[in-house]
Image 1 (spheres, rainbow, N blue to C red):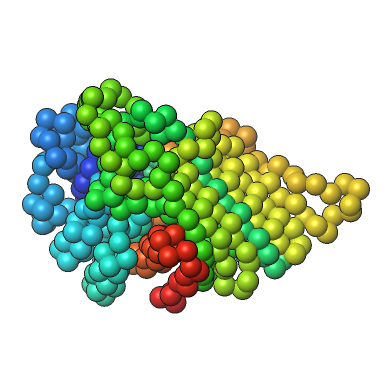
Image 2: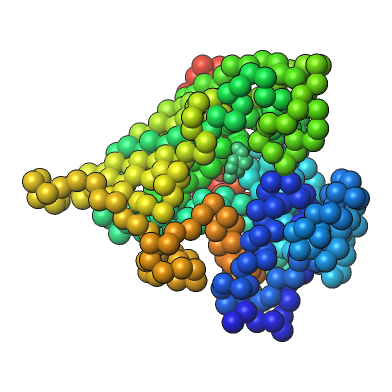
Length: 396
Ligand code: SOE
């Protein structure tokens, strides 16, 4: 059972879509996993006092506040969980790390490489004092993805030749879908590229165990102005009423790029919010000299595996339902075949963060991993502007 004696007092900054997902993770993790320390949902921070108080009551936080600086400085806070738009990640994370708080920061790590570098430097300094930092790429924590990583590590698909990755959504395919912070470069840093492209960059590097070393890409904004939203759309992916006034879309609607991985594998990437009919389709296929792996988040409990060494007359992609107790995290949940959902990746993220803090180890993905993804995103933007191939420098 979870160690109730040693608590870990958590402050969450932001309570929209990601705040909801993180809150369910802090609530459920100690009830399904034997954690070495007990998370306490101490305070949630929002910009509006009434809405923050309502979120605290609805999501299970003991208190609410509108002053993140005061909360980060509190002696009775051990962890700061950042669930705000990207333009505030650096300021909050650096303040929290300098105050000796462990930090979990939503993806992408920052809106620029410079911010991500400053955050990584702060995390490196804090590590020397036993303070930990993690960036929230939760899809790594889907059991089928963990299985894919294991099969690659075991050499089951041999030398990797191709990495094909798509993240397909369609929530703003309607040109009259209103503006929201995700469509504002000042707030979000980029559009589909950073919001969902970041996920497939992290996922493919995680599964293959290699980094992207060069790329050439293109960004496109199909709809260049939209109506302003009538209500608050911070927690939603578009939708809601609109006003008659219209404003500019200042981010990309879609990104596509070709990449080379260390070791020579060829990568093909797409991230778009205009794949009409695709709601949250993360599709990854890795082709190797001895076999292939394929995953689609819209069928997230399944990993497809092709073993090229099978007799040709019975060879084919097998559908592995990754819900056995031997698959990552599954033993804590349900019997085989019952399946997990989007929210479980967030719970697994909390489990791994709390365990790393208790063990005095560095959680993964680290801020340095987040900085690497930021460098890939930046390279795509530069490539799109200059129509040139871009190399990506790595920390390691
Ligand atoms: C919107 O595209 C979004 O909410 C992303 O911001 C999340 O990171 C992803 O998990 C679901 O889609």
